[in-house]
Amino acid sequence: FKIKKTNILIFCSDYKIKKGKKKVKLQQSFESKGGIQLLLRLLKKEGNESVVYRIARAIFAMVCSTDLFYAKKFVQLDGVKIISYLLANPNCSERVALDVMLCLRVVSDVDGVRNADLRETISRTLSMMGIFRNNPYFLHVGFDFLGNISATCNGSSNANKDFIADCGIIEGTINLLQAYYKRRDEAVVKNLISSMLWSLHVFTGGCSSPERNISVRKRLITFEGAPSLLLYELAHPVDLSSRLHVMSLFARLVDADQLNHPPILFNISVDNNSLTDVLFEIIATTANTIEV
Image (cartoon, rainbow, N blue to C red):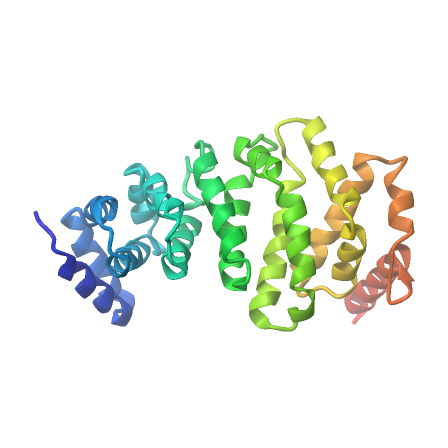
């Protein structure tokens, strides 16, 4: 079976207008002819940005499905490594990089991805997040991917999480929270903030050892401006999940150093309210809500 570049463009155009059963049939038909493998093969050889973009869109169209079969097939074909290699291109366009990140986010929940050695993919992802740091949606997708591959189950450790932490993700996330502070009323920025706070929650627990957990939590509380910024997010959360994640972060910070960390936290304030004031307000509000 042979496939032409024009067929890729047709597939992308058709996919955008297909919904429901038509979409499923299109996916099934395309993959029955080895579609994902062919797309990945083309991706290795293609140098034209416009064509690369359309191939990446086609791959995203295939793996973005409620049926994990396509995502698993993509992973089995070494798709994560192949598509992330596009991020290593110094001339990689923003739209290509975004579709690569969307693909990576979709497959990050597939069994085996979290346990794989993703150091190269992680490094490329962090590099692109730095290049396109002014695009909140790109950052949102990036944090989702990094958080997903770092998530752990049953208290097991995750080598990817250790590597990401060593790359300065804690400090970088706080810097981005500070940078987007004035734009927090924008819907896309709210989603970004929520994703960043969730990521901080992921990266500060379940490391490879208790010592690493303590180390990463100390880096968070001692980073300039971090405690005050987290208190602001606790008092003015973008959503309920974010508030819960920040509360969990404060609990972890205290647990990491019960002698020295509480005094640091007691010295911060927001709107002339201390951490204790904010916590009591949350408790009171929650109690009133339950009564109602």
